[in-house]
Image (cartoon, rainbow, N blue to C red):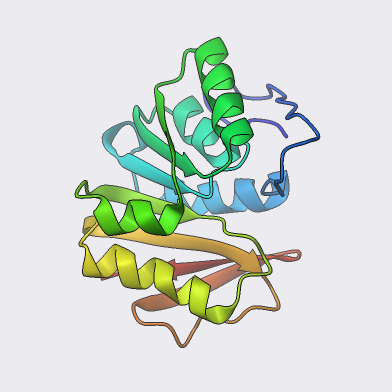
Length: 178
């Protein structure tokens, strides 16, 4: 994977093969950040990266100037890799090793953008718990955005707070707003 833009533009990051991850493709990530770039100043926002895996999305935000980034994953190897990479690049990414749903139930902090990249084989019930917990617990700021990455074969349009989606290859980003 590589960082698309910002101070670390072009840097390649190679994750250990043993991590149970499916990083967002560079093409999909670039398209997503083009959308976000027109809506937000990256140095003024806070990010929650759920199911963070390799930290791919967190690194992109950090490279673009975001300093308030929290990455949550339940895999120790993923958290360790994000910590090592963030330290090597001097990025301010806080990591939390936790089940994402338990974190969402207990968190009191609000974020500008919450990005979730759960396993593509999630059942619709599991996908629906993400916006349910985010909005019930008021984890988004007023103009905040929840983005869930999923397969193009999954349709989240019936979920509460759903706004729209964008597709890039086999990836789909569904956007949720208050």
